[in-house]
Length: 227
Ligand code: 5RP
Image (tube, rainbow, N blue to C red; front, side, top):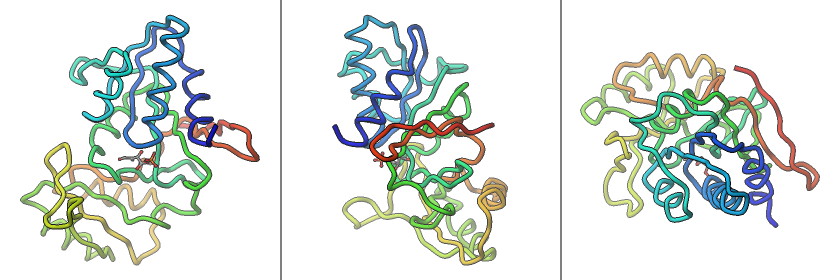
């Protein structure tokens, strides 16, 4: 069993009968969806889910899990998702996919947000490996880019998989992938980005994770955080 499977199984075993579970997006989230569906089937658990993306909704439905529309949900018991980077204070970087808006919405609405992170995801500071994905209203991208350049941001619009045009997110936004020359701490950068007009959402998840599940020395560990 590989690390992602160990972590996903651990998380699936933490889900209780009757829970409403938020499903993240990405390769780790996919393994969790499979593990959860298997457990629900084998143990006859009544689990409902709400998905952060069309891809995860379809995967869950195909695996036999009931999926609610996000509009029907006021609160969820737990949200389970992967991350691109995890800092020591459990701030996350997410959003290499195109589903950032729903991911953050569900992470915030859940009583618990369990992050599934294999050891490769841990960093000393947010932005160490990847640029920060910043979703912008399409008409605002140039003005937002200028605002971010004024505070030391460097980057450009994300391109689609073919590389022949800009990428458009599930929410209909464009994405600026920006590195920051100034060494902002993630809390400050979170506030700066959230306070920039034209920014729809961004990939810094600050103060949202309640735990991170990982593998150390071949053993699954859950590191608890606060909100
Ligand atoms: C998508 C995300 C993913 O959770 C993140 O990219 C990690 O993906 P993976 O589990 O495939 O490594 O934030 O927007």
